[in-house]
Length: 129
Image (cartoon, rainbow, N blue to C red; front, side):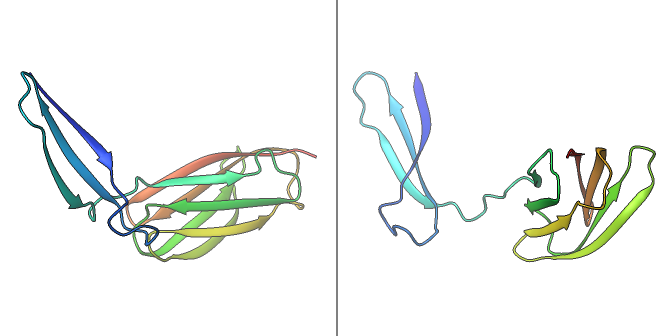
């Protein structure tokens, strides 16, 4: 029976931001294991968006990563589906962020929707004072 696992290996170039993984195959019956070190340059981050604090009272932060580079549209909706505000953001390195003033919003639940190319991310936001 063979076992294959991956181990992170940062001893080649520590603290420079590169990620390396060692592919290790272990064989039964005392056969030596084989290991190969390869740079993991093609690992992509799944698109995700974080909204904080949630619930919020006066300010709301938004960070997103794993996006397509280029312009992104961020929209805030109430639960009736009415668009309350819209922002055009630029994604650099697949990331973007924004601080949103929430002090003019009434207490309640809102929808924050980010669209970047064909990617769409949505989060519920609660305003509570």
